[in-house]
Length: 229
Image (tube, rainbow, N blue to C red; front, side, top):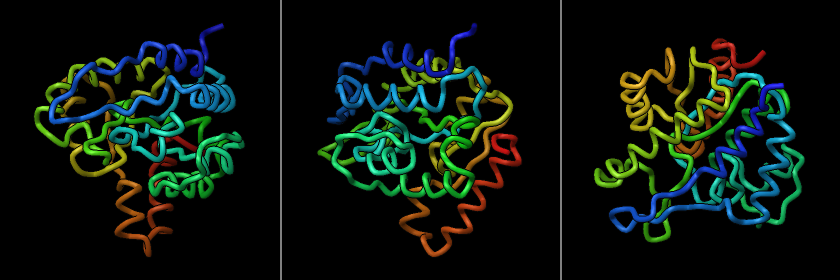
């Protein structure tokens, strides 16, 4: 029997080591040593990824302090981990904006079981970053990007080996993350095509009145790409 997606993911996490020092006073978010994080990750991936099916990748920037930076699961805050994924946890029950949109979209698209059977939500950088206690993106300073770039390329290739569909992937964000993804894709040939979607946080902060429109956009774009249905 081939290794399941979840088994390969656990090995990926075991090999995931942050760089020892980063420029511009940047600090790394690394939650994976915490027993509660390890427990929730194993429950989540054994529940939704215990098979060898290829997944369409939805690729964000990097984990933030209140979602994946807490639970260890991309775009999943402690509230939605418990309420939508059925995984009780001892984390402080705080919502995170991007996670709220993602899980509204997951419910809109048929629920977590159906969604995760076809989709892997991740980030170009599998670890998050902070500066003076605030979220920082991997590209926020030129020195940080140049330092992280070889490591990000190496770890993203490992993510693809989990079981990525190579015909199409989606960038969560239409700005710099999408541009960098496209540039790397031209050089390394990760996917045949990368399509951009508006970033969940941007929708929730600046286009909340049009949320239903964006929920439909996500569902329909992913469906047309063959990622659901």
